[in-house]
Image 1 (cartoon, rainbow, N blue to C red):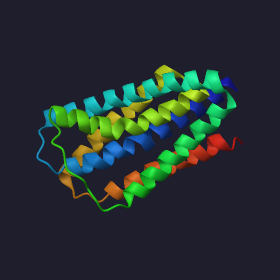
Image 2: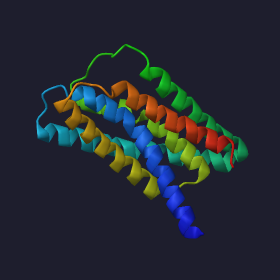
Image 3: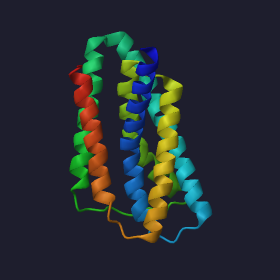
Length: 186
């Protein structure tokens, strides 16, 4: 029974990490169109992975504090945050504005990494409220986002940006589903 619960938790964390990493994947597709050297691609993935570790970690610490202070209200807040985040990702996937493209070097890389990892803060906040395993969570988020960033950059390097809109909508749908699951425990 305990083994089943561990596997279930790991799968849930993986799918959440995958959903949150889809932002980095879709932006990586577009950024992969820029002529980037392999060293730059490696560095971009590592920096995004690090941001996907720190942002949910900070969120989890704050979420645990809220959970201890506000109990069940905090649990509903966490589910609501995931719903909001999922809807926001789905809506933004259908917008046509691409925004200014930052160069993934120096300060531009930090801004880029921060922008694709902000969602992880909200998810970390929700997971902190529910008491998820911190080390496993942040490691999963960091590794999955780093791998998805590299995948997006490599695919973008070799193809047109076919998947950008669809991947962000998929990621939003996954977060929306987890938000519903947390609000309506079955």
